[in-house]
Length: 457
Image (cartoon, rainbow, N blue to C red; front, side):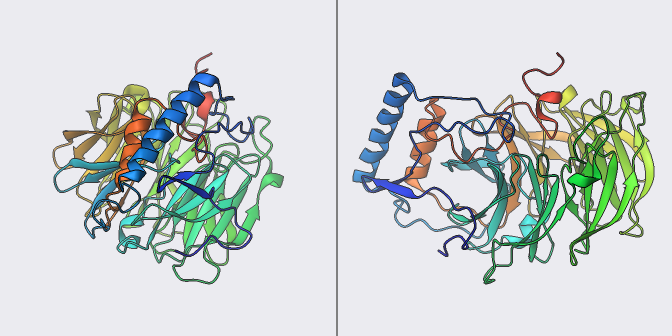
């Protein structure tokens, strides 16, 4: 496995206990910068926690003595088969789902989590065990090898708020890093490249300022057109939709977005381009939430087509969205009403609302783009939604507080020690406080402003 590139922040070194790899800070709580990671708690290691962690380490060490180290399942290998990967933010695990059978195959301890993994083009770019998933972790983004979930590169953006998308050709990862950076970053994501994992370009945007006293545009989310030439950034603090050219990496257009309600700002925060490249959906944190629909007949010049509000039947607090394979229907995750709002993109109306039985903030299609998977954070399940019937057809139990999801054509290898660590984490023992994603609880791009512990105060 190639080490992280020189000059790039790498993962914690592994310590082997009884033949089992444990991350170096496995029993040490991390006190993070409050501004970079507002969702984290300031924690110190008390005697009870230390004893519990020591007991967990003893259990893992015993497992190592029994030969349950990495690959201990009789030399288990990754399987080239479709998978949906769900990041359980409550216990830093990854649940691997078989989308053909709609069942959980295994849950593996990762020691990190991702609320918004890059999922737009992931299935076509993760067909080999050495290919990479791209996650938002700590104060940057991380490349994880899909076959064994090892860290291939870790890049700091100096912000705890990060969203990333990979270009369809797999050459680049483009990142929106919100405050304090107010920055767009481009990273070399080409496998085998001598500069893999290095920042190849950046756009510093703080000087643009923002509305309502914001100290910058607060770029929030990023989505890439299927032609790979353009990326779209909703600016939460700028009330703008910014169009980027991927290469050269530069701003080519900014569109001012006006409120659709009596709110004082439009607050665009998340967005999704459809697989046909014709439509862009953008979610807005204004009022109870609104949705805008943009025409991309000219990908460099998005044209506003419609604005939908709760008066049109939209669910509350629209957060993220996915678009169906034929581009005719949009699926907006509306956790404020614990449902999924279905849009008819032929006439830009609300067509249906699907009860998810809890709050889902994000979702992903399976590799064949046939079923939509929605992690229901407050129920510890993933709802499998059939777009043909607009119904939940399965509910799959996963780890604690599932949030982000992506898909691949490789299933991470079974790993007895990682599964044992997942079982230990499920008991409430915190094995590591490193490698978190800032969205651990009910948060989003605006975290505490809408979904955090102080929401509504």
